[in-house]
Image (cartoon, rainbow, N blue to C red; front, side, top):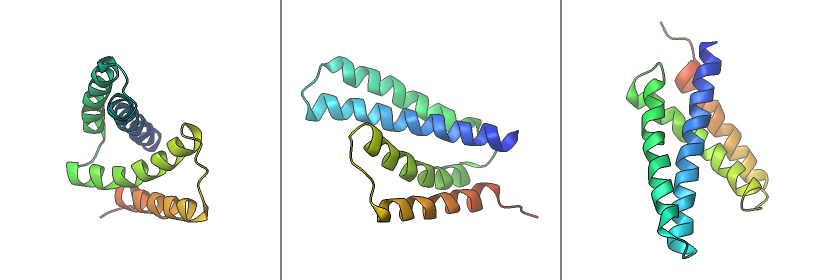
Length: 109
C-alpha cells in the first residue's frame, strides 16, 4: 500500500509540474491569455506541496522524482504534443525508472 501511495504521489506531482509548465508555455510561446499563466502558477504551487507527502527525506524524494519526471515528460510529449518517442527515449526512460526504484524503494538497513 505504501508503494502504491508513493507512486501515485509521484504521478500526481509530475502531472502538476508538467501541466503547470505547459500552461506557462502556452502563455509565453503561443501568446495565450494571462489566465493560462495564472492557472499554471496555481498548479505549480500544488506541485510544490505534493512531494512533501512522500515518506522519505527531501533529497531522496527529489532525486527519485527526477526519473519520474523524465518518463512523464516523454509520455506527455507523445500523447499531448504527438511526438512519438524513439528507442532512445524509451531506453532512457526505462533507465530513469530503474533509478527511481533503487533510490526510493531498495531495502536499506
